[in-house]
Image 1 (cartoon, rainbow, N blue to C red):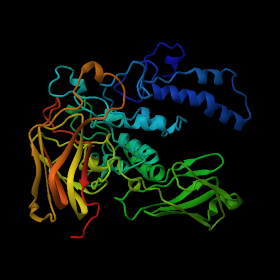
Image 2 (tube, rainbow, N blue to C red):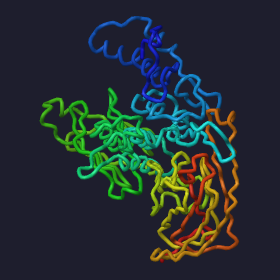
Image 3 (cartoon, rainbow, N blue to C red):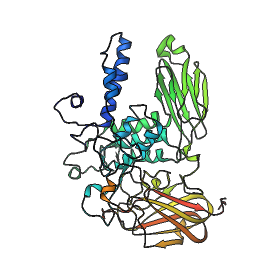
Length: 475
């Protein structure tokens, strides 16, 4: 790969196996910038040797391609908004490379959603699905991809619980009974996998999944002068997580991340001798509410608040569905699961595996007076949809609140516009009910799709249920 940038005759083969023989791959360019500008000089300093003086100049001059809209990082020079990506690419710049782009840039890259075709479009089958840089990645891609999104989402998330959605995406389509080993692909059918049998067991899939816990929820990033942590948790794991035996410069730590607080305890590490008894520095940073450096002796503990993006309000005022349990009895496209419709992120999607009627049921936890809904369909609105609900789930004896067979397109597909790389709102429907309805369980049913691929169902990026009374009542 390096030969390409220094005049070599070889084509570029980057981390995305769908993008071959392209110029200025962002991930590769950043890797070379860090290698010449930081990593190699740092290693040379430790070894007491000098490095060529022009390395830093070369590092500064290496280009990272960007779009004209929303300052998004392009995967490679000339990329347009209709591409499909096989595996994690641009988001790897933030983690694991840790290149110090600003947070807004990293967040924009994480939430970029590419366009798909609507039913009025013709040709260009390559644009038939909206995935992302979280959604430009193929749902049939390799297992380690979604783990990288989970880690980046945990670090960058401002509202919601999409880190948990990506955690589920990182293992559910890939584990195989009886020993729950990872397969490389969601489908093990070699005929639909380019004639290649997926790797099994897929160790890279294991490695990515484990890192969600060790580097996602903890925010752990080892620094030369401190162990950096930014602990966060999602409501779907009420018992929290424990990471025991974290080693850092001779010290050993046990970390318990709960829903309210995180405890970091330094334990005795007998294997490291005297070095293990030196004071160790814990740096709490990122989005933490009490950032700073803390020193821990052997046996000492540090307790800090756990960051909870799901408690930071909602993008739509009065949204009762935010991070609530969402289930479906119908099958869905891999990595497009029901929780995605209520996780606070427009970059994650629920998509039924069939265009036949399919439903998700959202449990609001309490009975509420409901006056409406806001639905961001993402790229592929349904042909028809209905909303119903009730106070009990048994038998699903729900009252219909709303039904329509006319779903308007607020972002119609236009090929030239779709090629632009920019952040998109998605197709949005606002439902105003004629009266208020009391319900704890709310059902959204979609039918058909206005997307170009008629073999799968519509997409739902977010389903917001709007309260009318503002106060929940126990059932």
